[in-house]
Amino acid sequence: MNRDRFLTQLAIVLLSLGTALWMKPLGSTLWSAVLGAGLGSAVVALEHYLRSRPITTLIGGTLGLFTGLAAAVLVGLVLSLQPGIPDAPKTYLVLTALLALGYLGMVRGSASDRWWELFGTAAKSPGSADNRPLNLVLDTSVIIDGRIADIAETGFLSERLIIPQFVLRELQHVADSPETTKRNRGRRGLDILQRLQKNKKLDTIITDMDFPNIREVDLKLIELAKQLGAKIVTNDFNLNKVAQLRGVLVLNINELANALRPVVLPGETMQVFILKEGKEYNQGVAYLDDGTMVVVDNARRQIGRAVDISVTSVLQTTAGKMIFGKLIEETTPRLASDRPPGDRSERPERPRTLSAPTSTPPTGTPVTPTPPEMPEVKLSQP
Image 1 (spheres, rainbow, N blue to C red):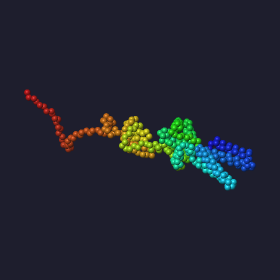
Image 2: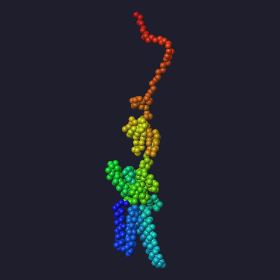
Image 3: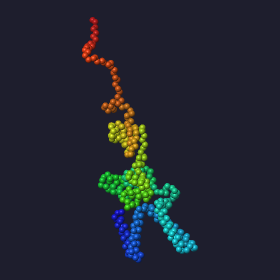
Image 4: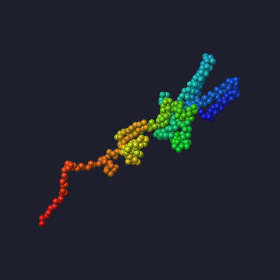
């Protein structure tokens, strides 16, 4: 609870106490002081309750209260037309009807936040799923991420988007950060909110509901989702786990992106851009549009080029999916000019010349040198 609000509530209690002491409605100073302090405290408690409830709940409860009171008045009119009933029981029944029907109408009206559909032209069955609102509460991380706006523009979202004021304050605080990175992220989040509000396919609502007794934004989101019966849309892993433990449904954009990744099977071909060198020798690394890493064998010399590869295997890890492949060019023979120096692959073998084995004379045997062969000379006759 902030300081200004505490001072305001204290002033209300003191004003009620001072008024009661001045007017003395009960005659006694002590009991008048108790009455004034009690009324002031009741006003503060009612103000705290109203702040924690959505406006639709308050309006629905008010309409239900007046409906119950109207029904109680009708009961009183019916009883007044009965001459055989004494006045004391009749008065008791009328007061009981006012209290009971007024209370029941208020409870029933506050429990239904689709009360405005009673004035619509389309009638819906009580058991239909449309009688319950489909609300999605957005947190700061999913707004800064921005993909929620792209999904909404495709028309896949039919739910009502709810952005709390405390999330807006957090975005503004990030946008005013002295750090360039955080400031850019905050401004991006504000731009995404403008896109969501301008989207005519969406019903985007900024709610003033807050929970002053809760300081953490994540816990406020969980409490808000409980009050509205809504789901939380987030990319925060910790918020995802805490909300699930507290019984709140969570939609994670990262899980949706993983589910929408294309299925790649071994043997399929694709074209990738070799971005950098891999960890192993002569490997190249590429990335798909969804961020999936592709490791290509013998692609180190293809860095900075788009190549066609054949998928050899797909590995699913905790960090994501990895695809391994090889160059399609490796299946076709290469020219000698395309081979790097020292590469002996696919080089034709030289024909071997078989020669008769030569015997070495034993040690101590004199070796007679063989005279060189003289060319044959033919003499011509005169």
